[in-house]
Length: 411
Image (cartoon, rainbow, N blue to C red; front, side, top):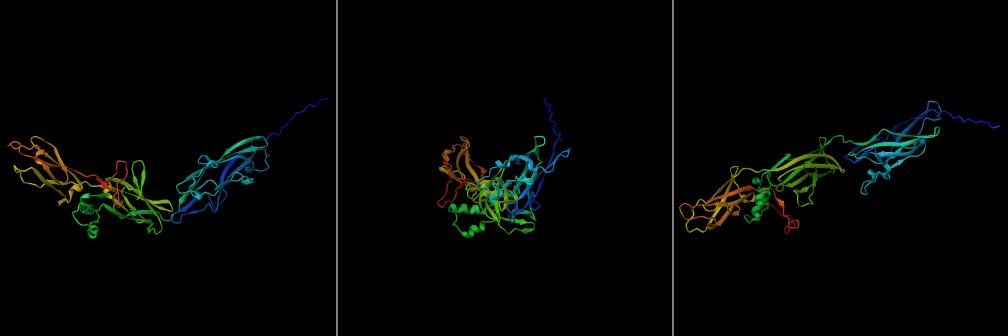
């Protein structure tokens, strides 16, 4: 006689799973602080790692669970850093050891700590990381897996500077350069053209507040105190979309030198520019200041000085321009003003002769006549301010240098 069998299963209540993230190491929390003056972190995770535990709690209304702790049941564990699996993060070979991911983390796999992230990487002040833990819990009562995902937690670092840094320059933040008042440029022009003999005393006397070679003292303060430890200055030229660092190794810009306490600019090379000066302590930008440079184009008046008439026997005509600006006669005006000499006659107009403060031209080229109605010349100068200097390049784009290796410039 055959016995009829009927299998009866235990009717388990569904498993309720809750997960919360907590820092398991109170002496090494998820938030760090950084002291720029010493370049140190608190805590320093390279010495005291931070352990972040996704704490899994289980519950079933039928009382069928022997323990409410579910970490030991976790599988398919995954930690995401800003949405990317931590195991796939790749560090640059040049990255500092304390900022590398590889080798600076471990996902624990044993017992109640299963799934915990042990982190030995420090976080820069400029960095923020969002961490999310994903896994599956296996319910062996019902034979099912339940996916879990934590809310994101944040890793970040704050600057612990007791007093904020500030950068100061001993100069107006709007620097204006007037070539008409530049005695240094005038002195060097006269020396180059053999008008005066080079003299160190004359050169030093010409280096006043109007000289093109502008030395700008710089001070870094922490709070109200002058910061007396090592720091680095970097100068950036700003535009609407980006910033470009200027260095003294490049010969085609206006930065002559930069040190911890000053920078020197060649204002001859600037028409108008905006700059950002940044101070770095232990490679961290702690302070910055903006300033600008612009070139002034003052009004001036030009007069032709040869007031004599033309003799019937004259073959050539000489004249010299005198330039006045702010009530003063401008020396060597051809160095800062482009002056084109022209003449008009009854026969010809706009005849170009030469450029400079002086002119010598043949009368026959002007079209002057010798009758009563055409024996005249209108002589005049068409001037314009010379532009800022530029680096001289050859046809291959290479910089011209003199016998001393100095870069040649022109305007």
